[in-house]
Amino acid sequence: MRYEKHYTVKEWKRFNRIVERENGNDITAQELLCKKYDVILTDYKVNPLLNYRNLSKKDLAVKIAKNFNMKNFDKGMKIFDQGLKSFTDSIDAVTSQLGSGNNKTKLWSESKSKTKLWGDKRQNNTKSPSIKIWSDKPKKKRRYRKKPVQDRHKQNLQSIWGKK
Image (cartoon, rainbow, N blue to C red; front, side, top):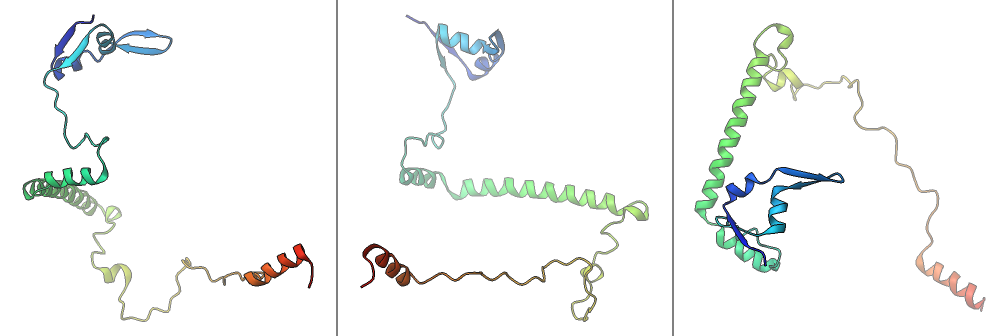
């Protein structure tokens, strides 16, 4: 009979260290405790949404729909907004660093408007680009034409039964 040992999750994580090595396999203190005792985690909570393996797709959709409400949606949107705001701040910092300094580091700051970068759409630029994007080669045509299905059936019947 194995005895029960009760641990909190924080205490249990302390035992996740290598104790022995056998034939290239690492054995942790958690594994040794599980072999000797019945370990019970006292403050471990299972997320009900993560227990989806035994549910059908319909039950899973119902379970997710029950937990989806405007309060949760607002929380998610606030987190998304904060992440987007920090991303734009970091991009602004990088572009301001590229814009300041000597003329060699000014990549995009000199050509802020699209017309300076790409040219005016209204002007008829007849200059051909130096690098071709699209190929000028025509499509290859098929060398042979497949016979209709009925002709193939007739040939097969003639080869089996002979000509009439």
